[in-house]
Length: 279
Image (cartoon, rainbow, N blue to C red; front, side):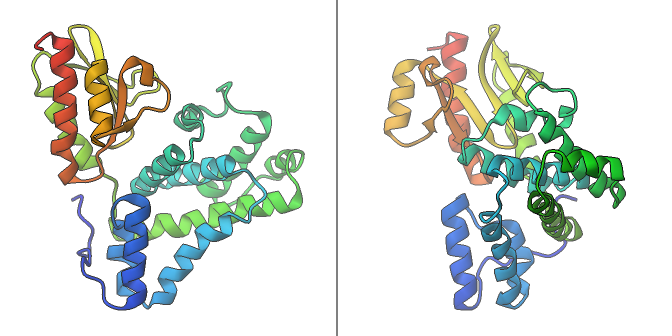
């Protein structure tokens, strides 16, 4: 069962809630499910409290990238798929190192992480999994972080649990089902093969031995087009420029919900036909 236990409230009552819907739609392109399922059923003060967490994060002395890594680590341990999706979206929007984000599960061995980051993430992992911290783990963290920064790490763990438990308790999940549908539509194209976990990509798709698109996280599609098609699609506003490899013809399309599937497949079909030699 991938639907929330309570039905989303699509038409909010009251000025404050209507404003909350408006601003989250402007920021994320849609009204977030926790707002429609949870906050919409409570007095506005509760929703304002949740919103204040994000504003308080801006007062942290830890870097935004470190704060996101900590929140993502907690969300993965707690298996809050919705929070993991939001984390991915924030990383992309903030132009933070996605490779480090992708390698988070291997932080103890990956060369992308510093000793200070490993110490913080060990502390976070113990606190989240065991609900206690070994004195040696604390001491190692204290060698890298000030007393205030340690308290900030605890704040991030504690407040992330609030987000996680809200979503898990009401069965608010990620766009996993949307991802599966998108994947099946891509595999339904002629002669397409898939390579899961291809490097930094979650799923890479090939035709005639050439990778014509790949997916980072649920719904984040990087699609490779012929140069003329790329220029036209960007000019028409049907996709956004790719951050790392625009010179190779890539564009980025975010499939956030079911209505995005058709325009996503239009671009994917265009790419497929080009690399399959059908155009």
